Image 1 (tube, rainbow, N blue to C red):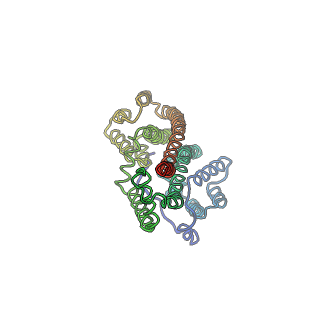
Image 2 (tube, one colour; image 1 turned 180 degrees about the vertical axis):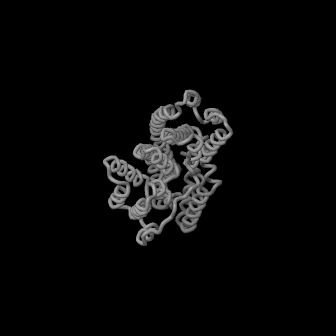
Image 3 (cartoon, one colour; image 1 turned 90 degrees about the vertical axis):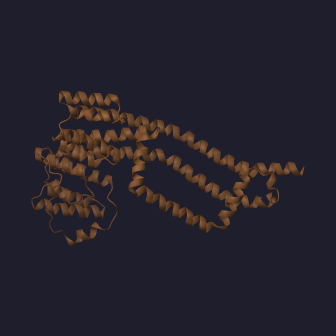
Length: 370
């Protein structure tokens, strides 16, 4: 049965208490959605009715904003609407890919399988984000520590030595002269430094949120050496996982591509998926569109071609997803092993600059006096 991507469920009146709760409370996180879907799948499997299952989960969640959304879904379900329609009234919580997989599961009588597919997508996405955060924690801590140490030296230590250095700038190294200037600026014009840093942060945030900034970041992610390999594997893995799950749920290929296009966060991969969709609409093959993407491995293109030829695209995509899962884990391990020595070298450079700017001039002055 074709899925209409533009349909919207009928809206019904919501409870006043639920309305008040939508605008307040903690943000709804991915783990909240995984908890809901997991609990719902288990309850439906043991025979609990849909409305009772959603109501029970709503009473268990500690996120009041999510609880209000689930209770409003219960109202819609009790009025005769399907779960997918109830989820569709909360597009900021449930993504189009989730809603359409649920809808296909309801149509084919395999709602539990559809829920399990969404849980798998969410859990894998969480795993990738967790690995990324873990890889970035160590260098982030070292960078913050280096900045704090530098500020402490400029404000608390270097001024005590500046009296000894006064009038002897000709024998001081350039690093010392530069740090002395930075120390004077930081101590006398700290307010201007604070304004400058705040303005730079605000401009940086504005740039990253702008279309131009997002476009630049998306391009850098898939073209920068080292980073590009991980990013391309992550985006390709996400696309194949979504497509494999939807095709196994009997969603037509063209509609699955339309849904997957909305799920891609990188605009260049979103454009790639749109090209695949346009090719299918024109009667071209699915595998032919992969040839235009230089970021996807040739072996993957070949497997997609074979899978389409023999009519087993979902099975091939499932195997490719496992392959990419292993690739991503290995990539993160390599990056983590490289980050630690690079971060230590960075800290060593900071320490060397401080020592050469503060300690070495003392030896030079002592030699000059002698």
